[in-house]
Image (cartoon, rainbow, N blue to C red):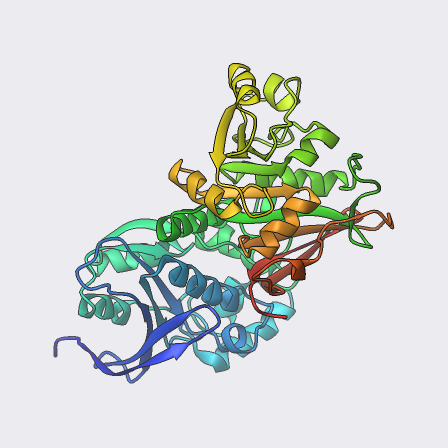
Amino acid sequence: MAELTVTKKTSARVPTAEGEFQLSLYTSNLDDKEHLVLLIGDVTARQDVLVRVHSECFTGDVLGSLRCDCGAQLHQSMHMIAEEGRGILIYLRQEGRGIGILDKLRAYNFQDMGYDTVDANLMVGHKADEREYTAAALILKDLGILSVRMLTNNPMKIESLQALGIPISARVPLSPHITAENAAYLRTKVQRMRHLLHLGPTFETMGDRLQSLEALSARAAAHHRRTGRPFVTLTYAQSLDGSIAADPGQPLSLSGPQSLLLTHYLRAAHDAILVGIGTVLADNPLLNVRLVEGKNPQPVIVDSQLRFPLEANLLRRHPLAPWIATSEQADRERQQRLEAAGARVLRLPPTSSGAVDLDALLKQLGECGIRSLMVEGGARIITSFLARQLANYLVLTVVPRLVGGVRAVGNLGAFEPARFPGLRHIGYQRLGEDLVLWGDLAWGEV
C-alpha cells in the first residue's frame, strides 16, 4: 500500500470579519477531496498551537442553519485563533459526520419525526459518526507543529488525533450556541456521543448562545497573552427607554431575579469587576458572588477625587479589599486613610479633563494579572469605555419598564476618537420578563 501523504497545492491571503488568514488547499492520496487550512502567524516548530479541526457542514457553515452549532463553532474558532495571533483551522471535507449531504438531509427528515441525531444516522444506514482524521494529522505534520491546544468539545476527536501521532497538550472548549432548534441535538451530543458541553447554567438560565464560562475564561486568557490587557465585558441593565436610573445619584433596581442570577454567573467568570465612584455613592454595592457558586471578582473603583467612603460595604463586608483607581492629583492624606482601612490605591495619570486614564488603568490591571474585567457602570463609566473603544463584549439586559431618567450611554461623539460600535455573534434570550442581548463589540460598524 502506498504511503499516505498530503500535498499543499497553493495559498492565498483571505481577509475575513474575524481576521486576515492565509488559506491553503491540500489534496491527499487518501481520498479525492480538497481540504482547506486557515492559518495565522508562524506555527512551524511551535508548541501548544491553537488548532481547530472542523468538519464541513454546508447547512450550518454556509446557510447558518439553527439545527446544529457547526456554523457558530466555525466562526467562534476563527475569532479565537485571530485573537491568539497564531493558530490554524483545518476544514475537512466530510459533510454530515462523514455520511455526505444526501444522507444528511435524509437523516434530518428522521429527526423531524422524533429520532435523535444518532438514531437518525442509523436509520439511513450509517454509523453515528463516520468522520476520519488522518488527513488532518498529515496536514499538522506537514506544517511542522510540535503540539496542539485543540479547540473542541469532542473527546473522540482528541483520541483519534493522538492515535495518529499528534501531541495534544490541552483542550480548549467551545461555547454551545443553543437554539430551540438545536437544543435536543446538543443534549444528544452530551448524552450519547460523550461531548464535553457545559449545558448547566448556560443551557438552563443563561440563554441560547451566551458564551459558557469556560470558553469566556479561555478567550480572556488568550486576549491577555496577546495584548497584556484584560478582556473587558461591559454589562448593565436598562429600561426600554435606555435609562439605568430615574435620577442621578439615586439607586434603581431594574433586573429581574433570573437576569440578576445571570449577572452573578458573569461576575464569577471574571477576575475583576469595575464600577465608577458614582455607583458606590448611589448603591453602596457589594459587587460579590452570592447567588451562585464561584469566586468573587476583585473590585476596582474608578475615583479620580478619592471620594470613596470609609464606611462603604466594599471596605467593611467584601472579602477582597477594593482597588481604587485615582489620578495623580488626588489628595494624599485621603489616600493614606483609605489604605489604612485596607484599600489599595492605584495612582494613574489624569486625562485632559482630570479623569482617570482608562487606557493606563487597563494596562496596569493586566500587569497585576487581571485577565478578564467586568464593567458594570454607572453611566459615565459605560460611556467612557465605549467612547475609548475599550470594551470587547457586551451583555445587555433590557427591562420592560419606562423610566425616563439617566441614560446608560451618553454622547459618544463628544470623545475622540469616537465611532459607533456594532455587534457580532449576537444572541438574545428572554429571562423572566427581561430580554438579555449579548455579542462581540465590533468597532467602526454602524
